[in-house]
Length: 58
Image 1 (spheres, helix red, strand yellow):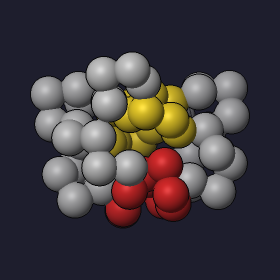
Image 2 (spheres, helix red, strand yellow):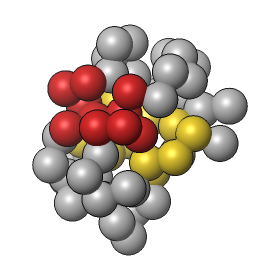
Image 3 (cartoon, one colour):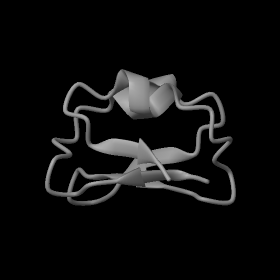
Image 4 (cartoon, helix red, strand yellow):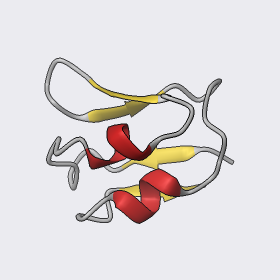
């Protein structure tokens, strides 16, 4: 399981980036969160931090 970003809901606020303990999330050139699946810990911190519910652990 890894964090998945719904690009239609992501506003690029960066909350997930700040909360990810593995630094597995960054904002791409369009300002949308992207997850490095090889670094994701499946901890759910990003999911909890996202105010738009744009991230789910799947």
